[in-house]
Image (cartoon, rainbow, N blue to C red; front, side):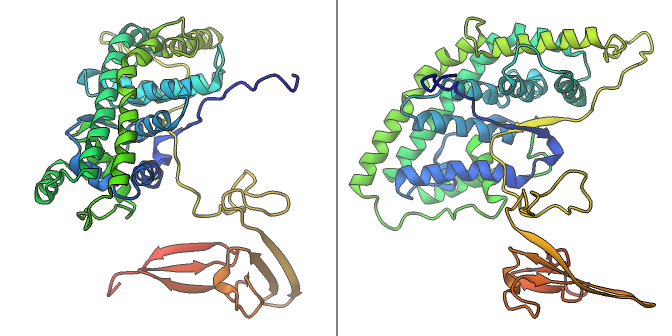
Length: 430
């Protein structure tokens, strides 16, 4: 490769992980990015909470993860001087996970989304066995069936699915722009908006992650509740002062530009159903199907998992199990792993922790033998700022000097290994 060879663009990356490893903090982070964008373009006058009250009803399937990522893709497309083609691909994949029609295919579309994300990020003509087995396990967690058949059906339905995705995406863009305009021009009734918010908002429950059997009445209400689930939601108060004319003009110019994406939605997304488009969803489905066929040829003992009505099916090969999801934004690490309990390295050779970037080290000063031997080992952790005035020196701790701090409505235990653990205060009498 010469210095003048342009670097091949890399699509935006998303994590494809087991669903039970995606927390509310991860989804809240994606919603927080959207909230920050709203504040940025409006000088702080528009936020997600107020948008929820102003926007029209937009029903979506209960996949808040896909919804957050779809809104993020729209923001990326609207903010870029020259939209990245990969953002259109990502938007198409994410909208597949939230479109409300036809409802009978909701589970299938939800199952398809992480498969397509894996194929897009691998960028290969054939996927390896490990990825195919993950996909098989993911499919069978929700839809008992043969992967090859599922992918053939998905190809046959792709044009209609993309058509519905384009409609939903166009509504999402126009509703967002209309709501921003209404807020910035003061065309809102406070009591009416609060009543509307009460009726439309969906509570974040045990099905908040990804449940095709649940429908969110309003996409923006679901986003707002995902954000406020971490206690970050903005108060829905009326602006005490009128929005300056200069700010109004800037925002209206922005939403005008934002709306230019809506007419492009159908053409851009429908092109993802063509094999002529190298990075299309249709080609990703072909990659997935071909990979599955070759996997079965390499694993002839792997029988189909379709349940037969007239006979007993015996499976000779057990693929990996587990439902997965793809998510673009993830919450930052809040704790360091215990390096005594993990089989993989948790830090560099120089003891810099991978999760938090903290430095830690252990130093043994002396050992005393006897019936009750004592080993005096000190641990330093650069994050132990609470122990800056510790008796052993700043940020040093031993098993004899561990301590508990009361912080807000909870406690933080500073353990002998230098890690800190937060716990809620016990209820009175407990």
